[in-house]
Length: 250
Image (tube, rainbow, N blue to C red):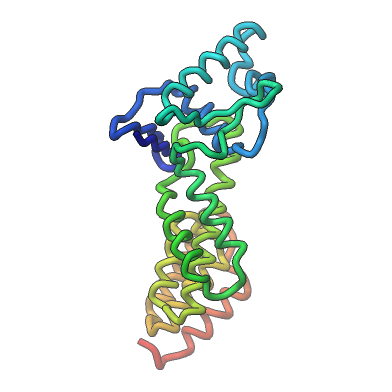
């Protein structure tokens, strides 16, 4: 029996190929525990977070029911994904057999971002690629709780940093085409990252795509004007002027 849980770009709990029907609140509660898997959660804190509109007795009952349903859904071959401390504080078990896309994503990116600058060693590189694949979109799409919005932005920025690190790896490896693809993925996540825009413009230019570099700058200038009512930075303008003055590249 295998259980996989996805929260990035979609929300699914699949057991033996069959999607389980969990309530919206239980899915949110599970995501919270996974995202804060290294924390012992006082029951009062969890009740305040998810059942603040209930009286204390009702809140305790709702928490107990949620834990029971989730434990039943994710128990694998008798192995419990949830552990409870001596004080009754629930947390994700470090030996849980359930697979969570958030965990795979975070662990891979943290390892890659901790690696020395330049080319990444093969095992870390392969894990980074596998982690980035997990980021199919925003955390818990359609949820707008304050804690979800904060975690959504954190994971989004982590993914952006991952693509920037991947771009640096490819540059160090001399693979301009792959570096450019990684840069464009970073801009898909956050097109207003001007430093990444500069790198993409340079990569276009150094790969002989002068016209594409100029078009990238023009798209950036239009975006900055529309979104922030500002012009590209002095450094970006200087970069494009150097490129425009070079007539040797097509």
